[in-house]
Length: 243
Image (cartoon, rainbow, N blue to C red; front, side, top):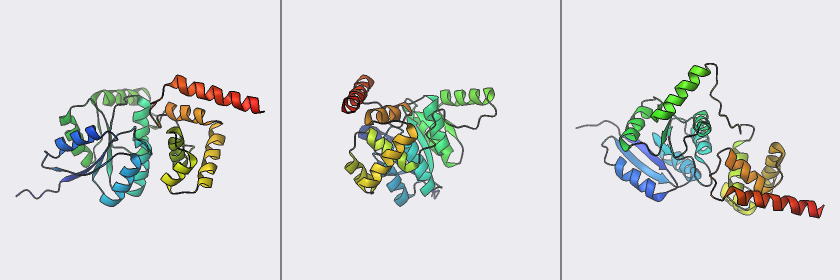
């Protein structure tokens, strides 16, 4: 009898059809066991604390807490868990931000299922694993910039984890009261974090905060940028008229 321990996996993906498909495929593998599914970064964090999976297959663009910040917080809470990013985003800024947060690998969603299985097994062994085109880009970057320290091109490191959480919820359209309920803090504390965000970023309205969150990859743009820009202009016009 084969008594080898199975690799336990948590799926963190906000699209149910993708999660279900991944689960069905992974459960066929004799050495892999799916412990559960999370539909947001925050749920992934909560489930990891309870279940302690070996591997989390993590999407980046998720509600409430994006995959990069979820990765950072999960590894602070459960350092032994390994995180493999599975994302539609192939831009260097996303890859570098994920790796800076502590992810062990990065696969694109067009990757074949067999490559995903290989990635899970390799990451479990402690080895990094990337989609071939990402691996080539990373190798080229190392050759061109051997002294580079791997910091993401888009830097939000001057914001605390809590400020990043508040920023994401603001950009997702949550009111202060909703944000407070989601984070388990008071509305007054949310307002303080919001004020600190605006001071640090030198941004003074919600539309501009939303644009910033999109530009650094904290959320995906589900609203046309032209509409957000229009809201920003209207907000500025109202402030001017009131002064």
